[in-house]
Every structure is written in structure tokens, then in C-alpha cells.
Image 1 (cartoon, rainbow, N blue to C red):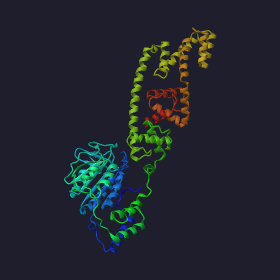
Image 2 (image 1 turned 30 degrees about the vertical axis):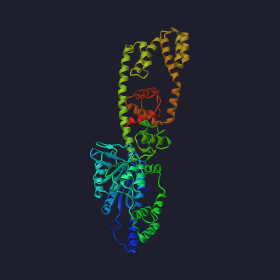
Image 3 (image 1 turned 60 degrees about the horizontal axis):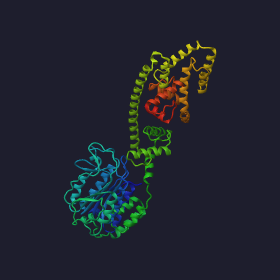
Image 4 (image 1 turned 60 degrees about the vertical axis):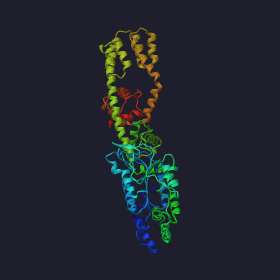
Length: 561
């Protein structure tokens, strides 16, 4: 899609059109300066829609319809769409070159505006969090623009079109149009882009209608200030006509058959014989839709698969589920991108700009640090409660029932290994004092380690030496049985990750680096590894299963960085 200032030509197109201008104007005996001979009213029309680091102004391009109407009304128009700061300066230069010869001037700007206590600025499409220190370089000062327009006192009109849309701003600026100190002899109107375009074409350019009368007919959103008088009119002047030069130039433009040539014709002959044909040609050109443009912009970034994985990881960490971290941007990732864009006021295309990738990365870094600090606080609180219960339960002094109570509440606690060892020693000592029949029954129950086996032992020896241990293990197994569906789902989720040996080793290493005793990093997820995973999940606020899922792995990876 063509973007930029329509009166700026490039390469051979410039040379060809300059030659054509000389040839055909010479043929008519008219070899002279266009601006000197065809002194015309001049207009500047800029519409910025596709902001790179702010929400889009969808209706801003409507003012390009205004540009066409102004051309038909006899204005020499400098127009542009989606202009950078540099392109905006170029447009201003072209406008200022034509202004001295003009009797009237119209300025139409549509897009984002920002203001301070002293001025308002029109924002270029690439502005990144403008602040009071840099907006003077980035944007167009409306105060300065009004001073320029005041050179045509009584014949100057400025139209500022915008709607309230999010834009990230720095120190000293607010979004919108601030209070304007309009110079004498200048008319200024504000409103939304649709109404501004409509009222200029329908009301202000109507033959013989003055500014005051036009404003009275304008839509409700259009507000005027400054010089409001019917002594000033923007309506067309009498036809000047260009005779053979017009037709000859048009023939050459048809031979070139390009957008540059068509726009050059409209600039040279704003009320020429072929204005409608040129405008129809331009209107019929194939242009990228906003979605196609967004895709093209992302394609230009040439993201590697690793870069895509990093983006997916960051989005997932921020709570936008990409349905996989595989470096492939499928439906899940596109939906996650759209949701993120919508949440932060960007156009939700599902395709990324470079600035958005940077922002996602920074947000993920901030989120990781925040979550890590929260996890540290939670872990400290859990450890304090763990130590307190170790003492309060009597486990610290070796009381058997206290040890069992501690393990039931803190199966992965700080003293779980100590409690297990002490209970094992107690059990071993007791084995030497019981009958052979009870010993065999207990050995069978323990080897089977099922609800039925422990219940069988208790049925045979309700007051047996291992009755307390059997009841404690029954309680644990019954609790596990109640969560069996959850455990089975957790096992399947881990299997779906398809972690190879190296992946498992990396998980163990990361757990160890975070202070969790996961055992040797050998790729074998044993009892210690499962306990470490459970403790990690508990301190991070995840469902505690002891099995990995995508959420747990994403968090482990994030904290590794």
C-alpha cells in the first residue's frame, strides 16, 4: 500500500513528470513556474490511522476524501496518510512553499493529538510514548500551525479531527486537543474524522456558503472557534481552465498509468478536465486491508523460531495461553496476541510489531521478578508455619503420634525426611517384639500398600502394634484416592510434554538452583524429584500434583532467566 506524501515523487517518476510538465506546458506557450502562474488556494490534509505504538485511528483516512473535494474546489493540496515525523516535515515544507501565492488556506489533520498547558501537537505514526521533552521534535505544533495560517488572515481555516483512543504518554502530556489560543482572522474547528470530512465537503465547500453558515449546518460533534464569519468562505473560485495543457498532460499521465502520475495530475490541475477520471483510477487500486498490512509488517521482522518461542513463553507467563511453546504461531498464539493487544489498547490484529514484541518482553521480565518475589515471601511463610508445627505437634521431641500428624499435614515439609526416618526406626524396633503372625500380616500390608491391605491388617489386629501406622497410611491413601482423577490428569499432562532425558535433567537442575532438593540431575524423576516439584507448585500457587504441566514448566524456565 502506498503511504506518505502524495506530492513527493521518486526516481524516474519524478524525472518523467518534470519533463512532461515542461513539454506540454511549452507546447501551449506556457513555460513558467506553476506556483507563480496558477496561483491557487492551498490545503494541507494529513490523516494518520496505523499508529505503530498507539491505538489505531480507524476513521482518520476519511480526510483523504476531503483532500479530493478540496482539489475539485480549486485548492492545490498536499496530502498524506500514515506519516512519520520525517514525512510530516516534508509535507509541511511542500505546503509552505505553496502558501505565499495562495489567497486562502485550509489545514485538515486527523489522528492522535496530545497537549500540555501551553500547546497541542499532532502525533506522527511512529511516536513512542511521547513526552514534553520530545514531542516538539516529533509532532506538529498546533500553535505554530495557527501562526502560519494567520498569514492569510480572514482566509484561513484549520480542522482538527480525532476521537478518544488510548495512547501511552510520558511526562507532561495528555491525550486530546487542549485549549487553543486562536490568532485573529483564523477559524478552527474540532470534531471526529467522519463529521469533519462530511462537513467540509457538504457545508464548508458549498458554493457561496460562508464559514459561519457552514458551521451552523455542521454535525453536533463539530465545534468552531476563532474567526467565525460569513465574510470568509472556503467555497470554489471561478474556473480557471488550462486548455490544451490539461489534456496533453493527462495523455502523458495515462501513458505512465501509475499512482504517482495520477496524483501529480491532481496536484497540477486540481480543477482540470480529468479530475474525476484520475480520482476514479486511484479509488480503484488494490490496497492492502489493515489485517494484510499487519501481517506484512510482522513478516518483515523475519522472526526466527527461537524468537517466536520466546514470545509464546512471555505471553503464556503474562496469562495469555498460546496453546504451546513450539515456535509456530497457530490459532492459539494468534488469539493470545489479539487478547494482549486488546488489553493494552493496540489494534487487535493478531500480528506483532517490533515495538509490541519489546513491550511483551519487558512485561514478562517485570512479571517474572514480581512472581519470584511473591514466591519467596510465600515460601518463607510456609517454612515458618512448618517449623512451628514441627514443635507444636510434638514431632520435634520424637513423639510417634506427633510425627504422624506432622507428616500428614506436611508430607513434603522441611522435616519430612527426619520424621520418616524416626518412624521407620520406631517400626523396626517394634517388629522385634510382635508375634510372627502379626509381623507377617504387617509385612504383607506394607508391601501391597493399598487401602484393602491396611484395612485387612486392622481387621485382624485392631489393637496391634502397627495399628497407628496402618491408620495413618490409610488416611493418606484415602486422600490420594479422592484426588486420583486429578493425579491421573496430571500424569497425562506431563506425558503430553514429551520431555526427553535432557529436558528432565534441565528441570532437575532448575529445581536445584531454586533451592529445592530434587535429587541428582540424572533425568530420573524419583521420590525426591516429585517432592521438589510439589513444593515448587505449592509456593507458586499452582495445583499441587508433583507432575509437570505447561504452566509449571513455563514458570521454571522464566525463573531460570
